[in-house]
Length: 226
Image 1 (spheres, rainbow, N blue to C red):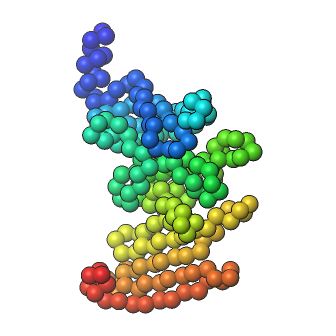
Image 2 (image 1 turned 135 degrees about the horizontal axis):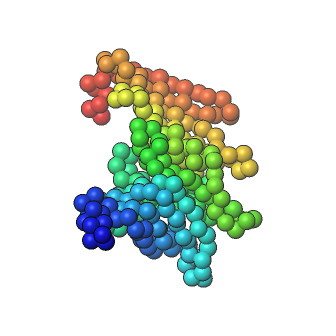
Image 3 (image 1 turned 120 degrees about the vertical axis):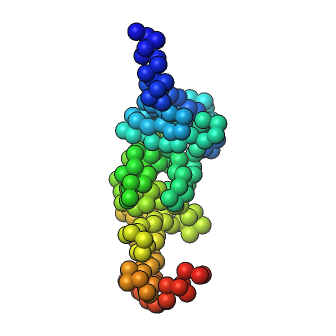
């Protein structure tokens, strides 16, 4: 009976036992151990736990979880880390300072629930009072309502999202993090080519709490040569 079960597991292409991976180079502060339910030769998915260790003290820091930590494996059969590619690879763990407070935060992939079935993330920020990573609903929504994980621009202190509708309408938005208040959208760049002939490009900036916008129109054949 054991041999039959083993053959069935091989045929299915999945390993039923938990699979563990160590990530040591993704964070300045933490090393991480991922335990996920099932893996094939190309990807892993399912319920998972992420155990964080403090690199400085080599002591346990915190355990977090994901209902569906979906991710692909690289050529060495390991997960990537901190990769955010639009319409392409997005890692199971993203370490970064998302709220620009000088401490490292963590986004954990949780399935493919963002726009067009793209990667979605639960985002945790470091709370200096609790000395733990705590769930951020606003940042999580930002990573679910758009095309995958947002980008982080430390120089300008902006979070950048991308959205679209079909082939012909795209929008880029930028957000500031307002201390003790949360996110505030401050910029939009919209490209609308829905009529098939002209691209209407609208730029909106929030200046002194008022939106200022500029619109230009281009022939599609000229615009997409740029």
